[in-house]
Image 1 (cartoon, rainbow, N blue to C red):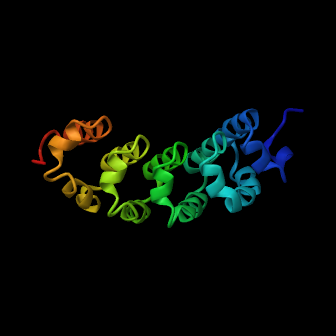
Image 2 (cartoon, rainbow, N blue to C red; image 1 turned 180 degrees about the vertical axis):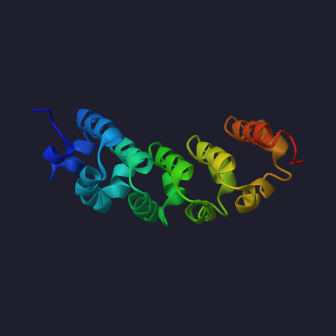
Amino acid sequence: KPFELSDITDHVVQFSTDQYGSRFIQQKLETASVEEKTKIFPEIVPHARALMTDVFGNYVIQKFFEHGTDSQRKELANQLTGHVLPLSLQMYGCRVIQKALEVVDVDQQSQMVSELSGAIMKCVRDQNGNHVIQKCIECVPQDRIQFIISSFYGQVVALSTHPYGCRVIQFTWILTEGSRTL
């Protein structure tokens, strides 16, 4: 019989941090029933933040954001609370933050983005954080990220000559079609 998610009960975290185990879970989550997801999700939650920064585990968390139930997405997003900035600056965590921004509701997006307040330039100039700022600009309604755009005022020249800052400025310009003067 083929191997199923139910076969790895009590070993989900172990599988998630293994290259092949992570791939197995990712593939199964794409077609898993609500019942199957519900069976393994409780094992993930207590370890969610550790998995978010793991080379293989982050992909499992991303798949749960993508294919989990609404309540599972909400619970994972709650795990981000208080940790959005450090995750945004971390190689694997920034990918989880980007995926979450794509799929959570506007209120949760706003909560996540608010945690970056005061650290926008730090993120823009960071090799990982700049991708999170771009995703905020792409996915979060403009009225919820005006403080991000405002932080660029008077900084455009400096950011345009920065290896990561230039990406954010270009991305912002493209998405807004140059409609705002920075």
